[in-house]
Length: 237
Image (tube, rainbow, N blue to C red; front, side, top):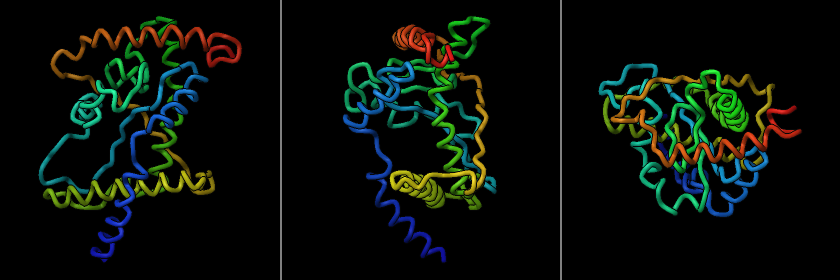
């Protein structure tokens, strides 16, 4: 049974480049047009993280479950390419929650609004734009219950590769069903949305936000608030 499972997963993973990929120029343009209707022109993607729990303690610890989103992002290949023209064009950027830091390619919600109406309203707009992302993760785990808690051991690199392959296969199949218009409905089961967990980052001088990133967020914020405070906008309904 284990061998058959591995063979099936290897076969499914062979479609990864087709089903899990960074959007090409045409896709990015479509996404930018979609988010422009929400007050975020130039936004081409949403970024978020989720935890996949293990039923057993791993023998060797890697990145802990409480690891901050910023740390995970900085250790990814995405971070290494964020300043290149390979992934973004002109003023394109991603939209994230307050768990990330501002970057000229990553506009985030504010951590502390402190009674500031503009910041509070901007966070409302960001949350509205990101609701699809929350639903995506919820549906992914509703379709594949194993992602709520993987019942496998994690003792070495081989088993780690197995877990990664399992998660990738779930995402590939999820995307395949999405492309085929197999919409998830309440009859298929409840979708549990995860609560945002915000841990403090302690990475060098991370509190000193990238100046260019902060300026970029202020620019996006001004346009977003002006757009959404008009009749029909998120803040004026």
